Length: 195
Image (cartoon, rainbow, N blue to C red; front, side, top):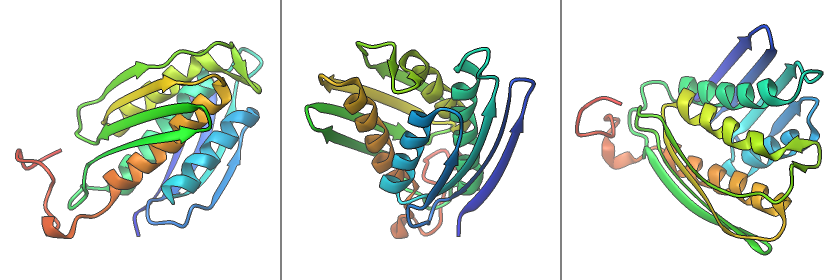
């Protein structure tokens, strides 16, 4: 089983996170941002990862540190669970419809972090989550995972649906990227021999 635990402690946040890549989609997410909890639960369910997270941050300042550090920690814990990455498919792509909204996510766990963010929101908040912070969350995720991550919203009316479509598309793309390809015979999925 590919399982990892991470504890990230700064002056601004304290986050404990556990992931099982080969899980069943169970989650237990605790933070002071209800919509963030909902999206992490959605990610776990649709990626069929088991995810536990206890997230505390300086919300009295604003949500920025908490949301960004959540992305960083999620990337770190998945990278740790993947270990040497031998045999994984490495890349994944998924386009997910959420009612009137459509999101595409492509990811390559290449060791070369990059985020392309082609998303626009109409509202400053969805539920209790500041929408501008989602780019920071996914930037932190891509950086700490060591992944090339492209996220695009093709169209949509509801910001809630756009965000949910992104998390669902990311989950499906990550599921594909993390799957073991038997024909690789446990080799590193790179012509360079390293990721």
